[in-house]
Image (cartoon, rainbow, N blue to C red; front, side, top):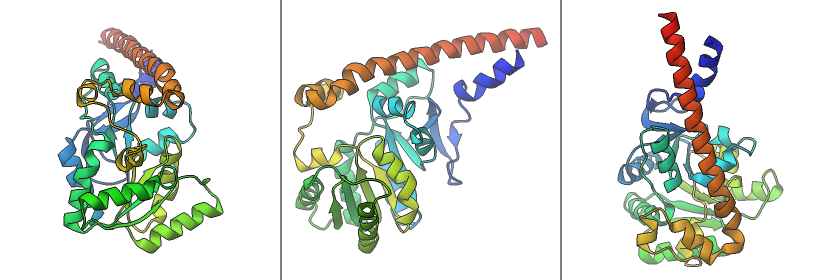
Length: 287
């Protein structure tokens, strides 16, 4: 009986919500599928990340949503990359739902298409240079142009598409270009799992920058992909809009991925109930 309790404890019972990551300061977090998700509100998170940009210490920042969680269960290295990040935040209502079902603290949702403008303002004020890496050519450059249009003093020092292989000569040239421009924040939008694996593998080579995965952010900022109506986004239904405008690209993620995610949440909840019942029975017998 004791072995059953020991096996499930680390996977189901969250540790102290104040977790230390990579030796850095403790931050309140919610452990969902073994991934510590930060509990700070969006304004506090942006302030923290802007402060990190002043420290010249490498930081890895990532997000999770239902799709990222699904991928983390089947993609070698992705789960470790997420657990090894300095900060992981919630970018999806599915994760908030999972937190409620699993009786975890519920994280705030912070989506890139909303926070990018606040980040741009903070970087403009603090003088933090940005580098945009990812998406299709020339969307990263178009996103940089649009950011400068709204924030003329924002220093976007470079932009490059994300269509190259890890561990390739092209990848080495990209790293050289980033370091030559000395950004304080590098936004990496290559899609999951490539962006997380890239950040996990190469962030330490970027001269103390904050390296942040951003998914399809440049598509939104450049104007290529429209945002969902606010009432859809605020009610957790933005995925319906994305499916409607990009059905060929998104149908697997949402029509197959969402049910898989919900099944995982329900299975985890059942395992929790079994574990708690077993632990309670074992405790009663021991007493």
